[in-house]
Image 1: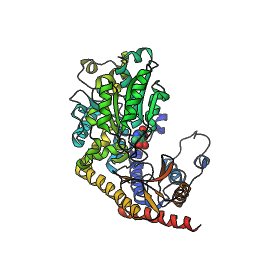
Image 2: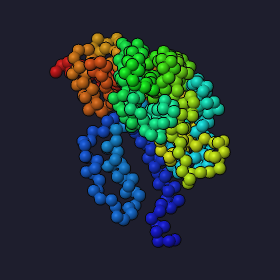
Image 3: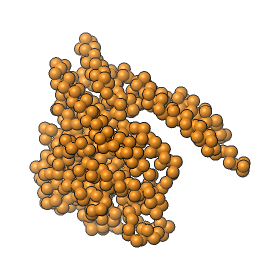
Length: 480
Ligand code: PLP
């Protein structure tokens, strides 16, 4: 054995530690309920517990595993806890984590079809499966004018949508010479911040995104959209991009896709629909009305890494017509030239995303889809929605709390009656206690608590516990 070989983990050691770590993850999932949901550590605590300098000499792997338990785990907020109700779910599952492991082991770079045909072809197939299983528009199929691709995040999907829109609006000029200074884009004040970021990153400018007012249900007001577009045209701007949200981050509001899509078509705007969390629900036919009008969209995304039992990162991004996207993002240096690409018979997903390299992310989706089946996935989505509705019912009947609206899916917004500071104090108290974890938002100028149901193993008893903790906290605050 060459001297430097001793630095490698041998296959035998990998097998041993790999088995130990699979056990570790399985045990973590079994005992995740015993930890305080939110890490109680203070800023700097994790770093302070670790050596300031990198190890000069190799260390036994056992020591790394010890530190995983002693130094890292206390600094983890337990997103996999069934009592995690904050932000949005990031629900992982056994099949997904095993898919990730295989992807890491294969270490494939799937930038071109030719750099690993299975990486591309499985991805195309899985995205076609979702199109079929969710009743998404036919034009999103790879066999049609459009197609789907896995992005790392909804934020990247928004950025890709903006650059494709810019490409189409400028006939490709923006890619060659830079974006013209008069482009304008539109979304509601409730759109996710990633849309604002995308316009900044794409060089259009954050302020060129007109953030339009919403109605009482927090959905974009189409009259305001029409006014803004015509005002901008009159001032010499070129409207080019419109984003809608199905299931806004704050309150799960749903923008009117049908009418927004009509405006987009009339005005020649690229219409992007962001269904980051809510989109997964389309697996269940009864929730599909939320996506009515999607056939008018130029692009659409949802995140299996939020609410489809698939670990981060995994965003499904679809376009109705792939030509603008590919034209905006394709670039072919000599070292990537190959016969398959030049034949035009294959998809090279590097042309559908910002980075060149890409992981084999379709594997984890494939494992998840085959392990759960559509029936299993639907059952869990329905269970989460039913639990959110159960909780909303308790809020509705309570004298102390008020409900923002009946939850369309798995997110409940509610507050203590009275001043905002009461709900703020309640959230702080409940999260510090560690039994459950929730987050908040603002609607207009009022503070609301959010309970987002969607962790892999959240059951009725966990939602009930959240309600008990909240009502006990409310009573304690009232006594003060
Ligand atoms: N869009 C919506 C509606 C979201 O709720 C989120 C995440 O909270 C995002 C986009 C951003 O998702 P990602 O982390 O995949 O970029």
